[in-house]
Image (cartoon, rainbow, N blue to C red):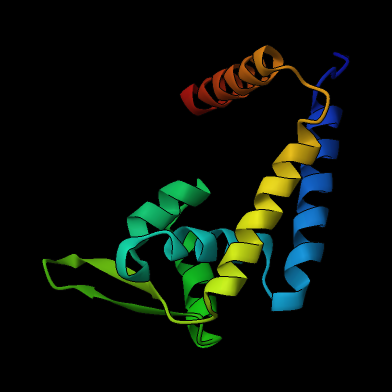
Length: 142
């Protein structure tokens, strides 16, 4: 049986990140994914993006994205409507919260990244980023 060298470490880091973000977002009643969508939309012109852009941001399937967005719409966080320029596409607009919340979510994200990378040199950070990107590409290739 092959011994797994890195999988447990990846799982531990992922779990720690999720736990930390979910604890920070709890005050706003947001999950990690919802917080990511809010931050993304808050940075867009008119707080609006396409459903496809959000799907690419999250790196999940169409149905997973749609379920998340429908849940956020039911909570009054976003509005989903057809794109007038392309009726096949949906536009998602942030209608919840205020800039102080978006600023705090962004600050939390920056603080988390700073904490995660504490003690790494700039070269190590770039290598880490390259390794993660290559690992992701390997998984996407099959």
